[in-house]
Length: 210
Image 1 (tube, rainbow, N blue to C red):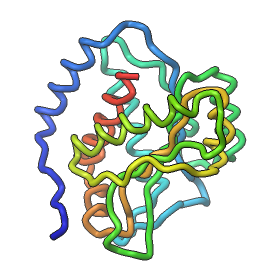
Image 2 (tube, rainbow, N blue to C red):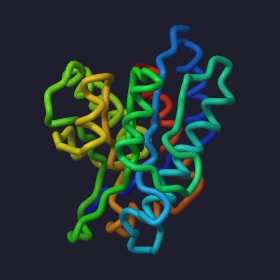
Image 3 (cartoon, rainbow, N blue to C red):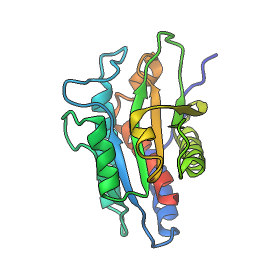
Image 4 (cartoon, rainbow, N blue to C red):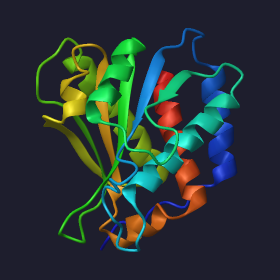
């Protein structure tokens, strides 16, 4: 039987986030959120027609909105703020120029197997100064996401993605695959505005803990 996504109260989650945030230390790290794809590069197309580039931009903008409402917001930058195509090299250059402490790339998954589901996190297969820290942070983010939104965990994996390869020597670097657009249940979940907010809050909670 397929695992049914948890029906979490948004108000309860928001209150919980506020409590967690109020207990965090004042020192803030600089975070670059890489919003995958954009412009003519739609990324994965959902079984219901939604596009990866739009989903991740909605999540990123929700993260920014919630962050800006905090008494002590995190120092967060996006690689794109609208539907534009930014080269992979420009994305990593931004992280280096800003001297980011953490680089988080947002994506959605796709598979020929429509039953494939869950969250998976990638770190660079190329060893760098921040390889171990990247694995640890990736695990923490995935654990929080799966707990809050009820997604299945697909674990931490290693890949030679350019955005990871070119940043792991400069900062903690992870790539998040936030569910499968080829899976009807998860594609429908990511089509809902309230669920986008759930996911954004869960990611923001994870970032706040780093």
